[in-house]
Image (tube, rainbow over all chains, first blue to last red; front, side, top):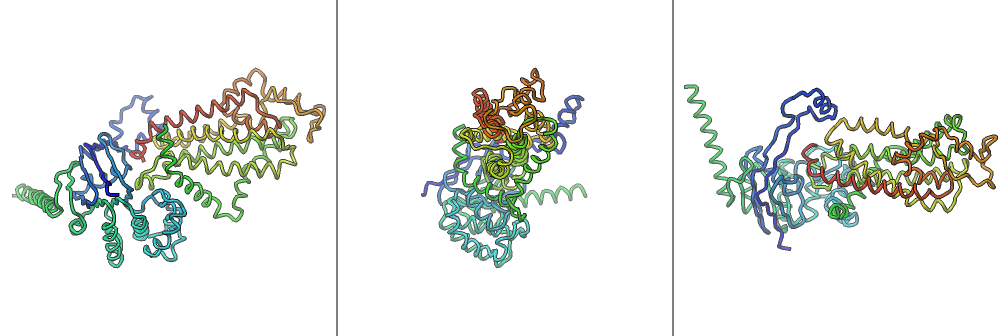
Length: 263
Length: 286
């Protein structure tokens, strides 16, 4: 314990977004035979352009930035969902990513079955999970829905279950992407309490959020991601201020620009 | 490749879970449960043996079909399942890291369970009525299963990757499997050197004028000069690993065993190499 860390060294991530065309073998063969050129069948996206970051034990890192800046992509690279195009990603510690809805749920299966499945994905045997089932179920307030397939759950319910599992299995490193945004006030209060306890115990937290209060409340460090790069790194209050300033400057610049063109 | 295997081992609980859940989902909604998985080979067996026993006068034709059709069902449903296994797991793959091989592997294991159960049940229930004999030759079956699984996993891994790259691959695979079914001696016999059934043991359904069926088999529906082409098919020797001990009550020939083992290891090796080559890019194409 205590030596958990996340290290990114000059990480680039470039991938191609394929258009609906050319996704079938038929199209590829026909185009090749007819020597037709449809232009590029894909657009290349530079999601991360040289990110270096070291997060050590005890740090709670908040990531702020505009939509599409690369915040969530960073979480996906850290959790190995996206392999980087170049650069290295080193993670030491038991990591649980809590991205979007669900941790990797099978929506055909019931909530209860998904607890075991998620446990297995995290490396827990069925026996180990059986000890945790009760507390997960009671915290997530699934009640009579335990045997209902997750596809019938509301997104809030699925998220609650995912959160309950992820926080019950005591990760050393927890990645969170906007989880607090789902759920009613009662749930949010409850979740925050549990979150706080977990944060106190766990080694590393990485939180992506647009809610600056959340970042300020939970994080000891923040980075501002802009255009696939880390634009600033420091104390949450400073970074948030910088980020706000830049947003205001760009907005006021736009207003001025509009005013100029109108005048 | 050892790293690949080690990582899979770490995810064994996940494979176990997928297999258990898939089997549960498959059988939960039907009162007959597992019996349904027997219906498909059983019905095929009945129809095919009724129709084709008129064409091919070989003894115990039902048993011959049984020995082949269950293996074929394993192969084709596994490859079909593998082909869509990664596409179908899109939601999970975008939220959590997995070694992608987990998905085709789970499909193959799931079908293996059905394969072993249905073959055993059919042999024990239907077998006695169509000349099935318990012999020591059946001892080769574990090796047969192992070969079949390795071969299928290799093909399935490639099918899974190919389908992510080209979504219309599914249709091609269906066509390919349809062709393979008829090119493989499942519903017709090929063998020119089948071990003659023990002449001291009268065959139950002996054909008139040919009590041992030897002449009929030697003649066979496929002219002798074409038979060598049928043997290029890798499934030929793999199926022989089942047809020999079950139908002929004898061990497969040495060349059949070597070919089956060689072909299955080659398929597995190539499959894993191809899979590893493309594995990392898959997530961006889902």
